[in-house]
Length: 98
Ligand SMILES: [Zn+2]
Image (tube, rainbow, N blue to C red):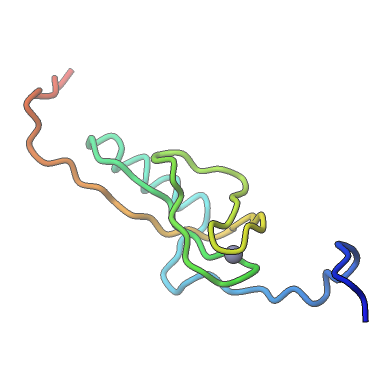
């Protein structure tokens, strides 16, 4: 028995597939950009490849290359994304249409 040394066991990593309906990075970026233009806020979502938990990116409106999973702390580089759309309701400051 080995005491968990962090080395060469990459083959044992289970890959969890993205959720059905998730978009490719290009599609997710394109859709998010459209929502951002309408004044909404977007949090990207992805599935951690190491533990399979569904994660929501803490930082809004930005798609990063890789994320640290809040459940298992492993770094995952998602290839498929969903997103959480935060609709802006009537704000006290009207937007200028320019
Ligand atoms: Zn994880």
